[in-house]
Length: 224
Length: 292
Image (cartoon, rainbow over the protein chains, first blue to last red):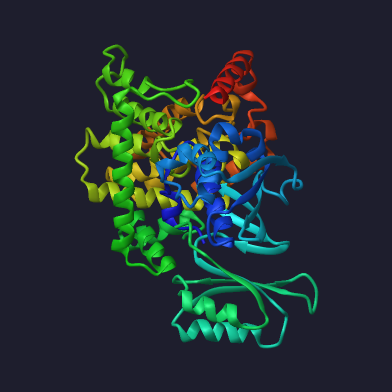
């Protein structure tokens, strides 16, 4: 759903809404997957991101996002300096993830590690600061950052969706969308649940405590 | 949000209201937020636009590479030029100013994108220097511009990497033209013609930034984009119509963008970026950026 405020916005540090603001938002989502600033990150740039990223400040913007900065934070300008000062092991590489139109020209693969937990995310910056995360840990997903979301991997058992939806509704959380994907039948199920309000820590802990849930993370809304 | 500008125009005309009103109503419904909250967000955007104009008109900023900066201030002070004391000059200097701030990694409102961020504040705030327009009407104009941009986003693209500069400064010119036409008293139908007139004038416009930097020609494309918007507003408000509806012009922009060679879509692989001077400047300036 296109919002008027996505078009008249975001308020951001220049120079490019796709290469700077969108890139920053992708970094923020990857940060949320490890629930904090990663100790290590491999930033693989594809297409236009790889070709013109340096001049557009894409490198600074993604690193700024990983550090938790928002697109209108003037510290983005100095993100690479801050990264070095903090001693973070972030590395850049250029890659080819596929052909257009299957792979958007502004795509990045982020491999982030924090406290022995590693996640891999593929996302694209679509223009005007809008983004789409298309893959997390090899599972196809669709996250556009316009909602607060919960992502989780669980054993594919009967009633899992109902149980999680129940925990959320008990806390008064309204579900906007719920998408489930599996690599194969009986394999682990990957869920992306978009919700109207941020999920409370207690609810997240309840979901995490379910014996068949392998991991769960909260992704904060980054757009709109 | 509306997928066709024609639907919004029909709705506004049948109710005797503005595109801004119907856009705000739909946005409020889509987002589950009151209209006043959306207006507040647009009011904040307006303030950031004003700040960027003021910052850019000082004239002391230079981009990362040093390729652009300081030209908006020349328009502010120069006496020469056939349009020196006109609203045209006011618009032009503001469009340049905002884009110079953007190139210097300053704070702007991406509207619809950062690369095309100068056109809308240039046109709206420039016109407001010579026309009695209060903040509420400027906020309405931003809502109308947002509606037009949302239609372009759904039917075509707002990304230079996908559609060339026609999808950035071109879309911005269409947004500014429609929004300003309504702001100055034009009907929703006239605003629609203004969108079509502006967008048709930018069809095929490539994205060819030197070294891939949002600097040259981007800063000047915002100024010329604002000029095209002014031409469209002038024509539409005189009652001139464009035979192809805005939605179809926008569809055409999308089609041309899809057919556009990748060299002309923000990759610096063609156009001005690959002229002998463009290549030389890009090489010199990128080396300078790396040296810090």
